[in-house]
Structures are given as structure tokens and as C-alpha cells.
View 1 (tube, rainbow, N blue to C red):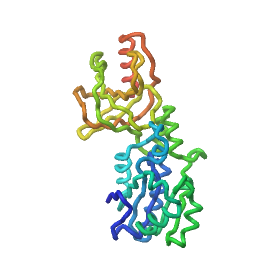
View 2: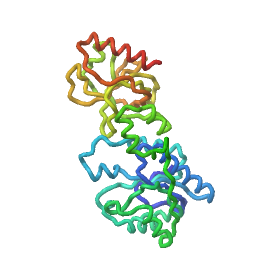
View 3: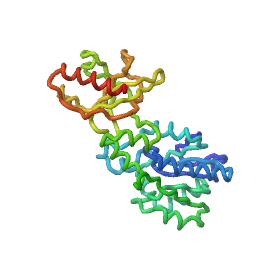
View 4: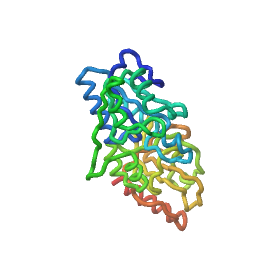
Length: 302
């Protein structure tokens, strides 16, 4: 998979099939768009790729939105690789790009730079200045700019359309089992282990601490997790919260990894959420907290 930072494609990748969207989370709905586009490329023996945007446009327009992402850019790239794309176009979403009209986007990028033959989008796709472009706009300019626009029907579960917004809400309410089902994988947070106050080590349950950065904040509480790095894959328990027993001020993801009792500072690890165990709560003292952690570990190992 070749990654393009600008939409000037090599000759072998132009005149192909492109699926376009934000693809935050790369859930089953996104996967449906990509699979249908890939099938079309296979049918006509055309190059096949994905176009996506970085940063996520809503975070670019509203700097106050901090915890929004379902997956990081690195995760998105890794997940897209599994679809065996020929190429990935990463469009830098900035003021200049966002100020161009919908027609200019079609003319300059879809027609002139990628020479796209088949363009796959989801039903709610919006683009161009003030999101004025939509699937009707694409249909209107098909003949003029020599491409065919194909709209993928939304993926539904229990008559509800599955979207990134829907999944963010499920993460916020702790419905991790459902989230994982809709992603077709465990939702995960990747980050570098930072130094904490070493309280976990003092009470016999050492933890690896991560900041949540731009990730959507899951329901505060304890989760059964699988922790992965380049060197290991182990089960564990994770707490997302402020540590009220210790009057903590900063939101942290603290993970106790089963079978590992060594310093992992500055190592990059992936916390894969398996199930929600209980909400975060304040304990009377350390004895009660230790007793509860033992129960949490028992629950996580079930």
C-alpha cells in the first residue's frame, strides 16, 4: 500500500476506484464502503485506494473538541492495510483545503489529480466549503468530470444506522461489547507509557499509565483488557478515571498487566478493551481498594 500525502497519483494508481471518507473508527459501515469499492476494482481490474483526511475535520473546525477520535491516524493506517489497498491518500485538512468549493474539489482532486473512474461514498458524505457538497453534487458533476459516483447503502443493526457518532456514544456509556461487535475488533487506545505516582506498585498492583489525548473518553471505571506491544500480548485490567480514592485531578488510563512486573516507561503499548467491569468509585481506605482490585481481576479473568 503506497501512502500519498498529496493527491498526485503515480500513473499505475490513477484512473482507478477510490473510497472516500473520514473513516474514524473504520467500523462495519466503513468496511462495507471499502469492500464494495474493492469489488468494483477487482471486477474491472483497476487500481483501488482510499482517500481520507487528517486531522478529523470536526476537530479542525472546532478547537474545543478534544476527546473525539475512535482511532488514531496510526491505527487507521494499520487497519486500512488489512484491506490490501493499492494506495492511501492522506489529505491534510487545513484552511486552504476547507475553503475550496465542492466543484473545485471534484475538478482539481477527483478529476485532474487522481483521474478517478469510480468514486465510492456513504450516504451522508459532505464536502467542500461549509460542507455544501453532498451525493447530489457528485451526481450532478459525474459526466462533466468523467467519473461514476456510487453511494453505499448504510450498514444497519436492529434498524439503526451504524455511524462513528453512534459508536462514540456507545464508548461513552461503556457498551464495549457492542462497540467491539460494530468495529469487528476490540476498540483500543495506543500510547506511550508515562510515569505515575507509583501508588499501584506500593499496594501490589503496578500499573502502566497512558494519557487519553484525542481519544473519545470511555465510561469511567474498570475494564477487562488485552495489552499488546511489540514484545508481548497479555491480559489485564484497566481503570479509566481520576482516582478519587487518592483525590486525583488528571484523567488517566491505568493498566495492571497480568504476568508482567517490570518498568515499561516510554514504551508504546495498545490497550484493547474487552468488557466493562464496574464504574469508578471512591474507597474508604487502601484495604477496601485492594480487596476490590482482587475482585476486579477475578472478574476480568472469567
